[in-house]
Length: 105
Image (cartoon, rainbow, N blue to C red; front, top):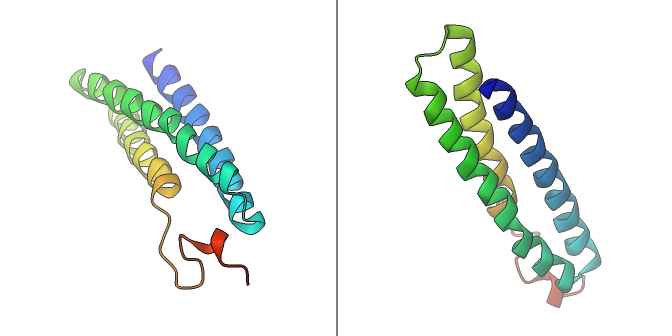
């Protein structure tokens, strides 16, 4: 039962992260500062999912899960951390500086 909750939280968080990345790219390409700020503000939702997933993973780990479930649980923790990092900490690139919305090509 708890594994199903974990899977559902992961899928929901992944959906939010995908939307955030798409909106961030849209904000970048269209130089839409307001959209970029909304993406940044909405990051709190993804942060909350990361916390909830980590707490659920810790609960599941304390129950000494079977090896197959242990793989899912540890993978879930990694996905949770990586999904959030991909939205909040994009790679720095000289071709896409953080202030590009101010500097048209």
